[in-house]
Amino acid sequence: MDLSSPSAPAAQRRAIRELPDELISQIAAGEVVERPASVVRELVDNALDAGATQITVKLMAGGVRSVVVEDDGLGIPVEELPLALKRHATSKIRNLDELESVATMGFRGEALAAISSVAEMAVSSRCEGAPHAHRLDARSGELAPAARARGTSVEVRELFFSTPARRKFLKTDATELAHCLESVRRHALARPDVGFTVWHEGKLVEQWRIASSEQRLADVLGAEFMAESRAVFAETGPLRVYGRAGLPEAARSRADMQYVYVNGRFVRDKLIAHGIRSAYEDVLHGHRQPCYVLFIEIAPDRVDVNVHPTKIEVRFRDGREMHQKVRYAVQDALALSRSSEAMAAAPAIEQAQQTAAGATGFRPAPGHPPAWFAQPAAEPAPSYGGAAPSWRSPIANSAQVSLGLAEVATLYGQPATPAPSPAAAPPALPQHDWPLGRAIAQIQGVYVLAENAQGLIIVDMHAAHERVVYERLKASLGAAAIESQPLLIPVTFAATPQEIATAEAQTTTLERLGLDIAPLSAKVLAVRARPAALAGGDVVELARSVLAELAQFDASQAIERAQHEILATMACHGAVRANRQLTLDEMNALLRDMERTERADQCNHGRPTWRQLTMRELDALFLRGR
Image (tube, rainbow, N blue to C red; front, side):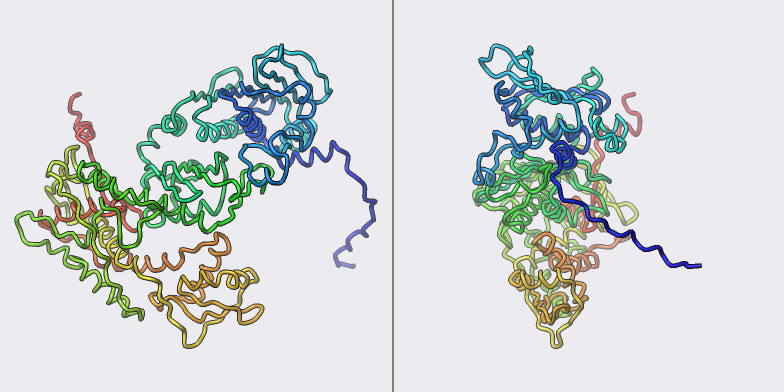
């Protein structure tokens, strides 16, 4: 018996022929129309481009049976209605120059033609001054008078009726409805000047009235998000980044509250997402996902929106610049802890903050933080009538911070970097204004209890002190350039074609990171130098990590991340340990240091360092007032 596999059937030549127009449209529709939410997105895009101030979306069966989008925009002249349904017919661009500086939501001229090829569609429209509206049936081409006010209505019924195989891939009506609502929600966040209403099966399910930007964010994402997020604002040259970044403790298990807009267009961009995630790197616990809404405004000629048929992806002319500036904008917004933010609200400190805000840019120069943030390392312990707290001894001043770095640097063959010049300390707040209050007790040598105006503060003293030490070490190391250490014998490793291409194209960037990586042959890379501070690490693993990030994001934090891991280890060992009994003076000194330290709400691993129990919460525990 012959057990050999059967041979493949002989290929038969088929003649090359032009595809029929209907099949061409259906193929194009597969790229543009994935589900009812895709129809909603495209039609709302068109309504916004038409200058609508009120958009109504009506759905049946989650949008599968019917999607109707009505607007009060400029409308379409009757003579242009048939042309609007043709492929690649649009009023938004005329030439290549306009394509390279697109400022509208739509521009490809594919939406209406693609939708009409897979569904029954009719368009009714009326311009200002027209005696009445006209309705065009996409399938029959019949044009008839209709009644409606100025604007346009697009009716899409029985989606995928002409391609039943694709209809089988749709989910339940509830799932499709959720996707449609999310599509409208994305538009609503970006356009608070437009009202949105969504109806399903004749019932009102969502409504967002015209409002301010802040009110629209609260209406769409909820007051809880506004309370648990920080304002982000940074501007330089042709780039402006603003919005809100959620606090680390408000992170979620799923990435379902992450919105990024480029020139008003919702996008999913790996480069921006990586930059934002990098800003949360040492304040987010585990695999939790941050919440954020970021709006990026950039010159249209610096971003290519003509990358994907659904227009959800973009490409930046300078990806590295975008990555770094988004990262630093979010990072700076998260730097203030809740306690230091309360201190900054004091009048004297607020005046200093306004003075510091005169400088432009995304990030203060290394070693020169804003005036309202004092370097903890340079701030002497507040006097409480006793000796200097003993728990502060490992890092009591800048000199001792430098000594700690010198010991570690000696191990890795790098000379120590002197600590940066401290900024002026903020004015002392009255005792009753201390955000973290005054210490009253310690529990089991682990937690510090403090009393403030709101009620009870509970502090994990090891986690809190670990963050204080860590931020001091980072400040001391931050001003230093990355020193490179040549290797006596270069380390070689087998590399992929992409790694070799990245090493050749990113030579300057690699040198700035303290690395010298060069091709030894067509399939081998050699590492001739590495960062001196990382002499004890795996050279090949470090090189691969840096090259992978440079290839994907045109930027790499691998070196910085490795340095911070060393500092985090130092901070952990230098922090006050559990079961250590502290005096009240030592506890109060820790609280004051936390109030002056960036990111003091979380330890280096993203776990919380303190919690507030208000008087109302304490009363509820004991049923007071009931």
